[in-house]
Length: 378
Ligand SMILES: Cc1ncc(COP(=O)(O)O)c(C=O)c1O
Image (cartoon, rainbow, N blue to C red):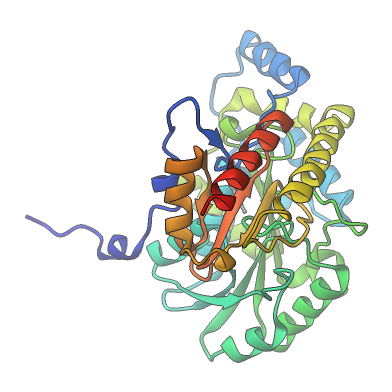
């Protein structure tokens, strides 16, 4: 029998083992997706596009209107994007893969601020690139610049950036983004900036793009999408933009790999980017839930929980309970009927658990109460 791709042996399955739907009485703090329906004007537009018969092949990088809409949206984040250099992808996930494929050669090392969303590690390994995990600070989950400096080798080619962050909920300050950019300039690195949670920052400073800072545009690949801020996870829509020579490569990859996303979804995705009230209501609701869950979690014995700054995750240091994170997650499910994600599914996440607060305030109160009863009984 022929062999299969040997790289697959190194690729994990992310959070899958702890995401399987539990019995109905379990409170799920595990799922990282908005608990809202996609706003109605977006849904109406996809139906209208189908009725208009928009079901044929179209421009591969994405419709002119949608690429323009993304460029206009990015301008709100002080990112200058030429609509000609925007490519629409099947999910932000595929945009990240394209960014890696367009900038890296086999064997190149990529600095990953860890613990990190596990797909970065999987994608890099799948393509024979080398993830180099660099632990963030334990007190606030922000970058540790001396650790980053020590991790650089002659093979380091890029740094993966994700702020607001999954799993830690950290939002890096504008000064830190500037420092990351200076670091990237010093070592001549690409910055792959996954801005999927950009509209969900609860800090008094916003998501800051390295591309918006002097000298940042030429080395930043900006990647984002509709899943989190617009409650569109199932639509599988993302974007990527960056310097022209990178985007020429991305366009080649996209033509070979996907052709384009579904034609009739594109007008709806453009409508999404014009909505403000709907997205602000969702964001405000997550911010409120952040306050509720943090107030409750910090009372739990053995847990240390910095205030979550963005996205919809609370990242808890559980070492004070004396349990490993896997034991904590398994026992929380069994004994407290609460499902959460153990940190060691991500390199550098040992001793932590991720709690998603993208669930109702009632579930948040009930779930943390169950954890409280359980932990206090130990
Ligand atoms: C940090 C991060 N980037 C990207 C994605 C994937 O986004 P999409 O659903 O658009 O592929 C996720 C989804 O959980 C995420 O947490």
